[in-house]
Structure formats: C-alpha cells, structure tokens
Length: 242
Image 1: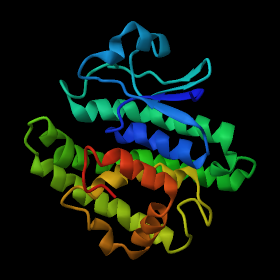
Image 2: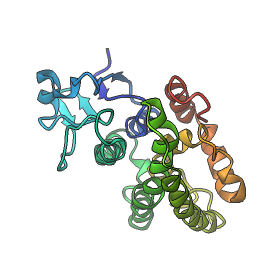
Image 3: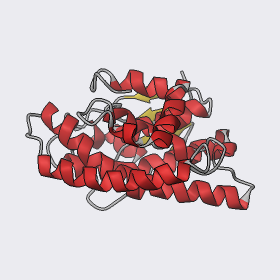
Image 4: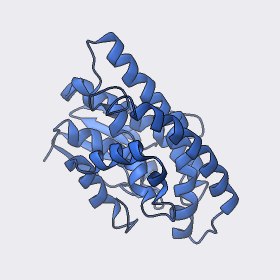
C-alpha cells in the first residue's frame, strides 16, 4: 500500500489535476474515492484529514495537504457544481506544487529565478484565465446533464468567447517556445491537462484546430503517460475524453 494517498472523486478535474503531477513526479500513490453525494466528506474519518471537509486532500505519511475556503463542504451534486469545483481548485494547486517540490522540483524550475517566475506566471494564467473560462463549459455540457439538469447554452457561448480570447494569447506564446513557461515541460503545462481532457467529450472538441501552435502543444502533452492516465480515469464518466 502506497504511503501517499489522494482523496477525492476522479470525475473531478481538480482531483485528476493532482494525478497528473503525481504521475509525472514518479510518486507511488493510491486514489481513495470519496462519495460527496453520500456525505463521505463529512464523516469523522475525513474530517480528521481536513476539518473543513473539502477535497482533494493529499496524505503523505502522517502529513496532509489541504487548503480551506469560505463556503466549504458543499456537495456539488446537490448544490451548485461550479462553486464547488472552484473551491476544489485551490486544494489541487497546493497539492501539485507540494508533489513537485518534494519529488521533481525541476517541474517548478526552482533554483532558476527567471524560469521559476515564468512557471508561476503560467500557473496563475491556467487557474484564473484558462480553466476559469473552460470550467463553466465543461460543467454545462457534461456535468449538469449527468444529474438531470439542462445545459445553459448562454453560459456556454459566453465562456467560449472568453476562452477563444485566452487561446489567442496562448497561440502567440507558443509561437515563441515549445511549452508555456519556456522550452521545458513544467507544472504549468501539466495543470492544464485534466480540464482540457474533458473538452474532447463536449461539442467543442475541435476548438484547438483554429490555433495550430496550441494544438501542437496539446498533442505533445497527450503523448505523455500521465495524460493517458487522466484519460483512463475520465472515460467512465466522459467517454470521449482525450
């Protein structure tokens, strides 16, 4: 049994974002499913891991990585899926950074001031520009229908407009370097994998076709074993992912 455990639902792109980092860092780990619908995040066992009942949580021996936010502990099945995924995102980014710092710091370029700064920049872009606009599209196209909710097409269209503007910035960046932070793979690239893998299961799977450098970047990432792991975890939920 692995000493490292990741608690959460693999349907969540915030949980599988952590899987990508763990895979790339070569960590032996187990994913421990937590059923939000059944309230498992509020059981005494889980509250001992995170007293606010949030996900994901990384356990490394007797050390736990988690972050708390206001409004924690809601079920994204029974309440608002988007608000819960937004909360989960912060835990996942902290877990990914911890994983890399401990096991593969070259994914953060620590020790090189300028390169590490660019990794940080694109980590922020991923969280606040890219995934912030992609996430509502995934929720409306994939998640809400799973729970019998209608897709809000206006929300989809509004966020597609925003996402296309973000992709224009990515296209310009990727004409200058192979990866987002430079000519080296970093956590900034890997953190895009989980949500982007879900895009393939939506009606907008061909979105990258209009951005050839973005498409080439994504194709390169898709060839990595860590991305194939994400695909395997997503397929039971989103059959056309990756």
